[in-house]
Length: 286
Ligand SMILES: [Zn+2]
Image 1 (cartoon, rainbow, N blue to C red):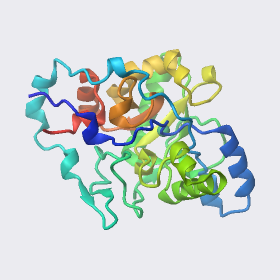
Image 2: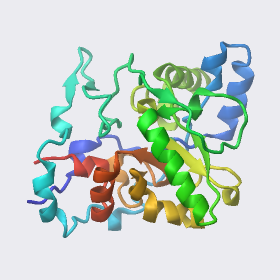
Image 3: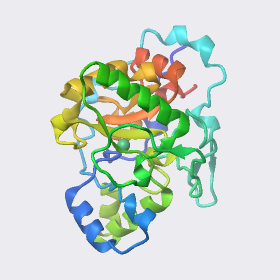
């Protein structure tokens, strides 16, 4: 049976944003405006500002079902299927019911609870391009250990990876969104920043990684560097997937992000990688 995802079932938004790429002006103005605010809060000023991108850029490649789909059925009996893991809130939003699940899906149609904070956040022992002990260094414990292994694997190949941004709290996302709304109006804020609860970084299972070859930035050309290529080919061996794939923008709701790693565990990462699909497709049962 094909588990082919109808895009309209997943992402209603017509705007495809980057899930994590900061915008310079927001970064600067944010730092200026919030310089005196509380330490932790200010520290995570991970800007979710992003430019609007052409959602049809990779339309020709979208949604090609894999030949391997049939072989995957038996092992997938007890997965947390998308439709079974949300409930409507009083204001009509779909709230994710399994935020602690390693296979949790948060996107523009699936909101994490506002009070959800992972209980086992730790700082992985990997290089970062900054020295401060910021909350965005953190991941959930299992993901952090796996990231350390992945970094060792990359190092063994002579590659240089750095971790740029992991956990981001709901509260931080509220502040970023409010700041953007005050500066540019709510409509524009909607286009340049993720809504609170819709950032996968809140799960503690994501890490944006970079390398000196892209000047420690989070940009698409990272995917063409030896580090980016190695991640795409080998990340699954450590339990990670590239969460926002090229050609899958209509399904994930986000543009291609070769730097955004998502931990799902080795078993699932392997299956997702082999099928060349997104987490949404993997968990979409007809
Ligand atoms: Zn990210």
